Length: 394
Image 1: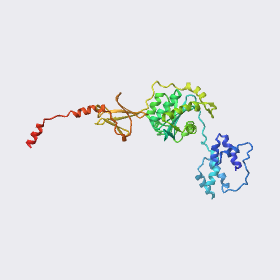
Image 2: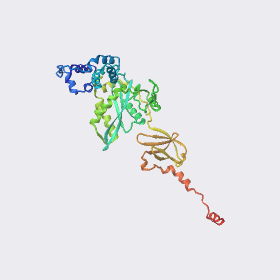
Image 3: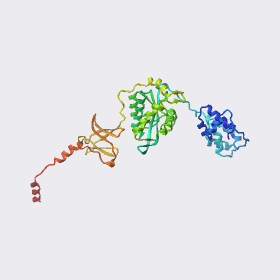
Image 4: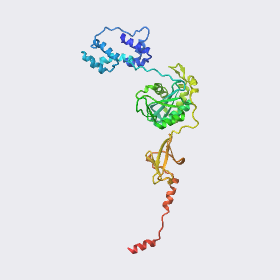
């Protein structure tokens, strides 16, 4: 049963735009109770005989502390204990909880962006069935701030290369690039925040930004709600796409269904905030996106290796052959998202492999070591008389 003060809190929260389920969570009641409390007849309200509380005589002091910005229940408890309060902290917290919605700085104002101004990027993850096996799926969500049109791509890793690939696929889906991309503080994009307001971005992310003509931006540390629109889409995908589709034949099948669902359902939804169909709103945003460059950014993993004396290089725990003429020289290694390994000497491609586990053995192309074998076979031959003379002399 609700008291009058409970009803007042429910009404106040509802007027502030708080969802009913969130109101219920704050007050520890069922969402249906909140719905009944908001009905015009308010039949859910029951009068109770007022009962005294140990806290009553200290409520003025508590309210004064709250008005001064003191919201820590432990600190408030110590203050009123000094005035003689001998009750528990639970009673105090129950009194403070409904008032927290009035706390300064806790209300987040939704930031609306102009067409083509901003894209918000984030990662989510979920476990689903792929090819009959339970697999942890990482999915990257990229959302345009104005139209609320979003794209997501599923893969098996959330590392730097997959982050760049996911962003590029979204830009290609939208057909253009925004003025800025807002990211969380993952290492693929942000190296560090040395001082408040200063951000050091990953060099490759800066290179990617320059290639597609957008300005990188990062959320303030510990304030991920700066990109709340995109984080909301992570939950939307889990509660809609991954509820409708729960098993997939392959990764390709998963991403194929994802794009189909995006076009037929997500793009056609009526957005609750802007009160407009997303696809229709995107038509006004599309002309404000910058054209994509003619050449796609290379997302492959780059590293340098020195070829060993036996003409192999070490990559991810296994050994792969390269032409023996390169022994002792530095080569560039590029690993693609499809587990392809390409080795370059300068601009020339000198070896092409598919990554595999070390348990399966080293990966060798016979032609790479043909010269080594030829040199091994050219052994100097000596007549037997040389050894006979040496034996006679001894």
